[in-house]
Length: 359
Image (cartoon, rainbow, N blue to C red; front, side, top):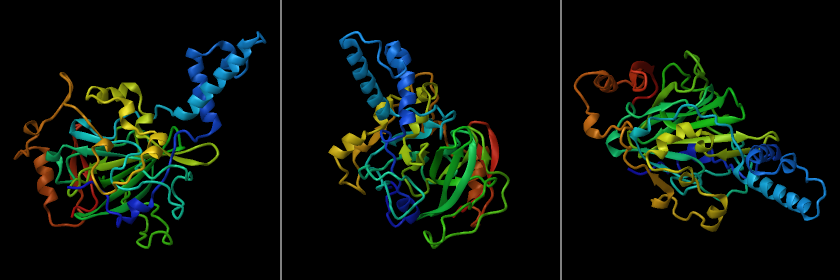
């Protein structure tokens, strides 16, 4: 099965946003600089001023300040906003890199005013595809998708796939409203609106009115949103849109918001943070010319879980004849387009009502 790269999928391809980390507000850069200065800079430089004139020392301070500010602009500090992972990574075999050539060009689109406002990024995929092991593919009831931070669902739209429709969901952080999560191609829980704030009809002829029959738009970190739609796909995808104090919008990597304590589960699978992102400079030097094809350099493969870490190889996750998963499978076969199926949350061991198109 191919990754999602069908450019006829207008919703996915026309929402091409662009978000360089290095072109962000000066305030953001200064914030990073000040945090770095507490550890590595002389006290005089910490406050953005040279030390009292002592010959060449003041010049060196100025140079150090300039260098630190440049570094701060490049790394662009972000809060450790993610407090729960987007999925259970024991299901995941590989993840695409930020600014990769995986899938399709997910970059600036001047005709679609709901994304990033920067147009300096080279064409690339400025999000992450999460690809489960192949033996988890084939349904939309197995690979869980969780809210990585507390927030409010601000948009839900239909996404097309050859096996039927699924959902694209946006969640705005309650703690840091300038950050917006976008998760693609999931079967969304029935408690949440199935259509909300759809694209205006002038941009999207298939515009639908808001769903009014739902329980909540609010999520807490770790809440089960639903399940990845793996019926005809290799992956599902996640993106983060950041809006700076000047109103400029950029894509940033999901992993830039993840604390070390949570990233440890990735480290235990053989991944370093630097593995998960391609710099803007490197992407400019090596433009993507393989759209629609597979390039192994776009992907990071997770190694087997280390000893003591949870892992579920296929022989430990059978399609059993009893238990919650068997109940889910039976309900999923009911010939109904809209089926409020109770789905099992593997983290909490409970059944959640999930709706949406089950075709």
